[in-house]
Length: 91
Length: 274
Image 1 (spheres, rainbow over the protein chains, first blue to last red):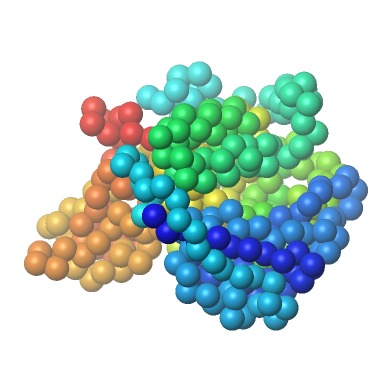
Image 2 (cartoon, each protein chain N blue to C red):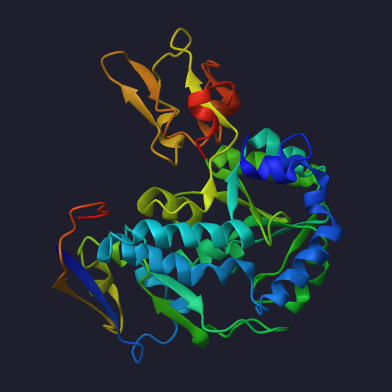
């Protein structure tokens, strides 16, 4: 079974909450921008938000995120994993 | 009757039991969370386990049931949700205090919504008096509402087509209400796409009275769970009770009164389906 591998270059993606382009563009809502840390008495600064792709199994490979990212931080490649006989979510 | 009602219900629906909103419950919950060594937000305590389950579904299907169960059990203990109807969530406004409108963490993280446009949730209970300690959780600040204001606002959310849910913060303490939708609500998302149950169905399921249904189709776009479809050859709405979460959004939009919400416990086949 082929699965997508979503690679996020965090040197390029520095302030995902400010930008939010891939977050809004993805029809499958694959991405999530989370605070690296929650502080007491102050908001987490926007530069301390990290982009992750927790729902990568839902990625269809449409490449909207890749095309729209202003810094080119996202790349999508594919890899082979053993095909299951049993319960299979997105195969 | 579900386990939560049996343990925390005191004879009725557990989320209408005032003790689950009380100061005493909140204090107990805090000690529990600290004992577990997490100063953390209950919302994120189960995050790692849930992520493991999501990946296992595709990469390790043989172990998925075990990991899923662990994620669900942890969620059940610290932070899980249940769908309620508009009437029920409005009834909760008479039990919980204070009530504070706040921004939605799911929408912020999944769609990067700006705080000013992101007031979709309610924080409930005495913990809200300390909101200023956690500006990150309450980004955008909070508006304290009267029960009447909250009920009116919830009716607006219902009109927009959002599903009312409540969430525990250290079960059985009910600390929050959200107005949810797929795919931004991680509760609905995890459930529908990955079969990870951190959002329970409501106490009801929707049934169409075909004699009254005009086939207008207004209800179709209301269902966030994919339970309502148009049965073309009958020209009637068809609701799959097994997919239905009992949110009532279809019912509140029907102009013919053709949809009723039936108590899940009245049918043996539906009673245990959460």
